[in-house]
Length: 95
Image 1 (cartoon, one colour):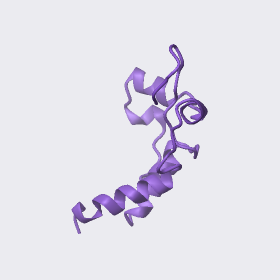
Image 2: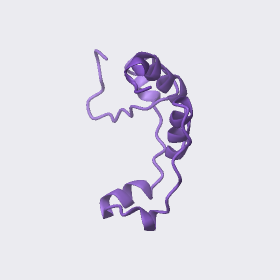
Image 3: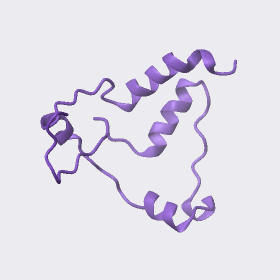
Image 4: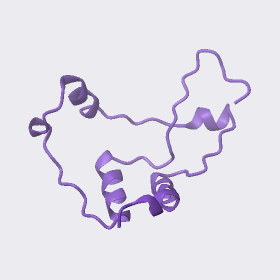
């Protein structure tokens, strides 16, 4: 990260594209809980800004942070990252 390219846009994300509901369902499974039910946008009571955020497809690539900045992801996918969080914070969870 010593020499970022001025004006470059560096996306920060992992290597495992997934819809939000898949990430939430995986996190719930790690905690031994059922995934929360999916709620239609029309019934969610979201603000216009939130609706516009979730209504769009946010596919991004992290190629530049790796190639130009030399970033090596400690947890290249959300599954490994969530498991690491649980390992680190698991003892603080209510039993």
